[in-house]
Length: 84
Image (tube, rainbow, N blue to C red; front, side):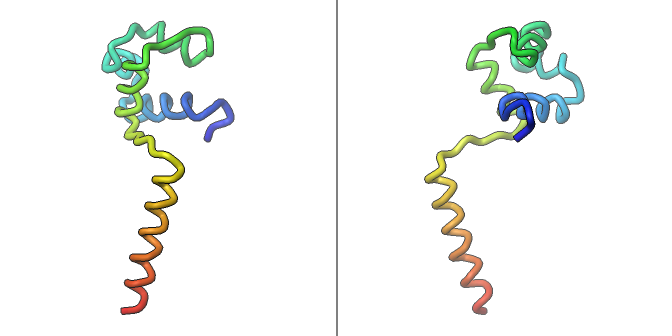
């Protein structure tokens, strides 16, 4: 996580992927000033727009339990592979 928070880090990752903040704003269907204000902690953004930005950044949200289950499954596969 960045020093400024995970949401901001995700938005910056989307900007890195798309090369321009204006492109992220356009694809999230918001005005560029809305995104700038949100990043500065001075504004709000609709959840639909934030979800589009998460998608641009390649973010998938899972619960801690889902993560633990996936980790356990991968450990099991790893043990099987190492036995062969």
